[in-house]
Image (cartoon, rainbow, N blue to C red; front, side):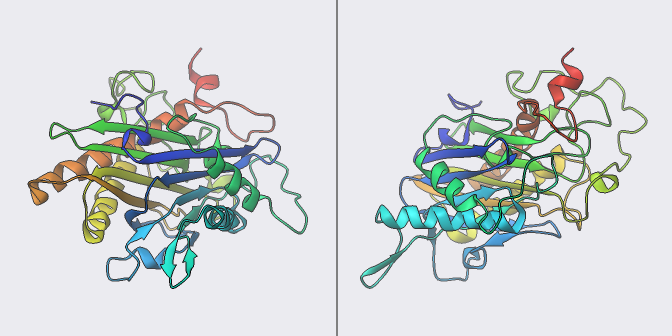
Length: 334
């Protein structure tokens, strides 16, 4: 069942902050563990944009991160990670190297530069400030849809957005996901109102429509944004988290398994023109008694939460002037 907020912050020890610029049609999202958290990542898209990703591999020295940043802005948005890093340094957070502390802030970006927003920022892109503002806004509750990194996100047929979901397992472990959906493909079954993620839906969290009674003719037709956007203009960036105590290698496996949720919610996924990436974090509040068996359940729950979060991000998107595609509600809720 979902946690009390049905957000990734149902995982004890996690906060999320968003900052948006509506004229820019872009923003940043910060996932902030209250204490440094074990983390890893799996990148399965062909066009990622990242910062401090290599250190998340299990064989690398640094085990824990101070924050995870998701941002718009393409490569310009990587500055959001620098803004968060600077703010965390002011707060005394970071990996200790003698008397110095270096905050570890892996960052992933999506391409939202031609979504109708004003990107004429001159010499300095605004993402460093957006990152700092998102960190300062971190709390247990946060909005979904056209906020944070999902502010200007799009898919092939609908506006994208920021989504999140959670699940509490029978053994008491909590799992959650957060995602900024800017996919090359579609989250709906063809051009219907039904979401591919419908089999995983909990409590009508994205309309309760289920799958269509019969698949439409275009259900598996590969429709993408290529007719309207430049190549490389797509990415679904996400993080999953759990309070289970995991090693860095187990966090890596969790990020790999979570990609199944992305595949179940988007068609197509993991293309050469998507930057599909999933971070995985462990806050380590709950020790596993049966590590291998429990990891199967945790990984499956992470995939389910991610699929649900993708649909929720699109379901909660709101319209803005100049949007290249409609929102789900503007097209279907009538």
